[in-house]
Image (cartoon, rainbow, N blue to C red; front, side, top):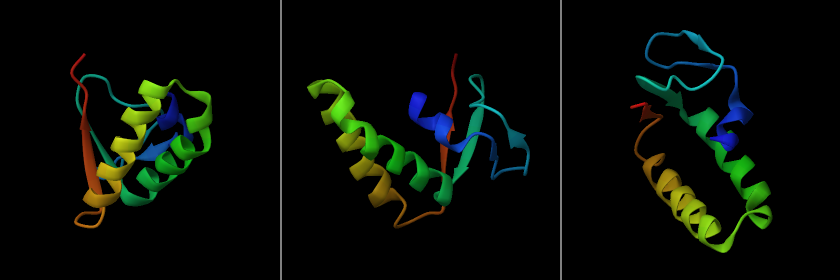
Length: 80
């Protein structure tokens, strides 16, 4: 979650609402440019995380980069 703070506030791509943080109980429509900022933030901090977290984050980045070849929006669903 800390890596997402890089994009706050962000514009929710579904309705243009300015979001100050992730909506923990519903969908968060995040545009490609914001995802690229998140990827950059993760990559810049990989040396400061545990090996297991680094593996997870590296896999997440790979997934994001592949997904963003096919779409400009990825939705993160909050389910708190």
